[in-house]
Image 1 (cartoon, each protein chain N blue to C red):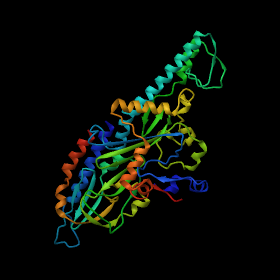
Image 2: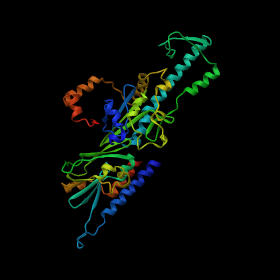
Image 3: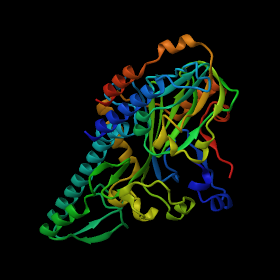
Image 4: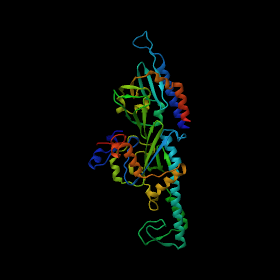
Length: 260
Length: 160
């Protein structure tokens, strides 16, 4: 797309925001250290059941990897919550919780909690459970709210599919984005803040971005043979094959910096 | 399924277009019948050949699969490409897909209309929203492409 239609150019320029044009297309997103980025590179020959079209790729990744990952993440949190509630019940209706302990609560050290009654506790568990993870039109959502931006690149023989999950975001950064001309129907005219969801709002006090990432790795490992590599390995490839990361970025890389 | 229905409809539309463009047409020289032939690639590009000029774009099937098109990245006139080499890309709201030269040739013309109206690809993929016109380098390469009937079968297989 054209930067002037997708980005608040003046604000981005004034604040020195780095704008990149991905070769994978898709919508414009703001990413920072609060995002969780995933990339799946698939070869058609290795995934014969996955048709190389946007909707089919997303449906496959939702069913095979991210759906199971969010399900197991939710289960872990729910069982942690149950264990801490049971522990509280055994000690009576009032308990002390300490920051960083395995009871799952992060609060100030020595904070005193009154646990609700068993009946209301069950109700609050249900109320606090996040909506089910789904693919809605072309977005990953919890209920009515989008939890990450997606884009794909489709080439002969394969595809690349990446997602920037919103663990958290700074609302003020969304001011760099315009309201997209092409929007999914379920969004209506909602602003970024009413449309997007911060994943940490659902389990953030009992979990972490790293924990969610661990569940994504596990879900991937359940389907494929997962081999972990370090960033140094990747940088070495850039060095050996392309003469260094900067050379690769300036030359062969199809993602480019946009000069506003 | 809705997806299969959309693709089957788009495949039929592509074939109908191909058949229309393959019928002999009158020209400014009434004593000569021109015959334009349309060929297709497995990656859903079409190639309408009229003499030494091939008009290339993506098929109706492809635009339906990609969704709303927001940007088309095209080469410059004078650029040359080998058959199956990527000459640009088409970007939708969700994906960017490389487009490949069906045959070897030099770019004679690019469709400037797509710069301001990329959505034309969705409404008129195989007519007004052609991408490039190529000078045909090696006519024998056309033998490796699919005709309309073969392409229709290819699409129906992909939709299932």
